[in-house]
Length: 99
Image 1: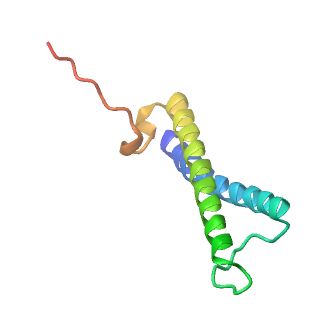
Image 2: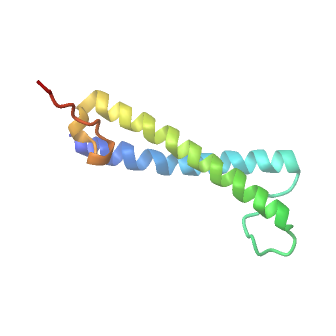
Image 3: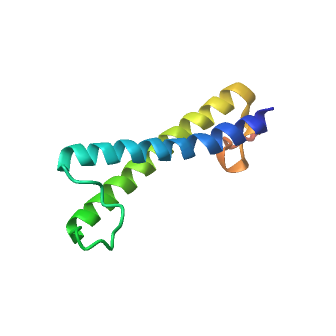
């Protein structure tokens, strides 16, 4: 059950976070600049500085949203199902007894 939970939460949540973050960033961009978000970087109506600014804002915003959601998902699955439910790269390292 834990591995299934990770597949649903650990994979689905970052995808949803990307979608929500992109929508929120687009909304904020359009409200603050009074222009549509530059989704097509080769459009002649979009300046290079505007295209770069949107790329930076959207890239960082989406990356932060995915990171936060993935950390929450990892913590939730770990607390509910144990470390073994997570992929190996997300498990806590096992401490060995040294006598």
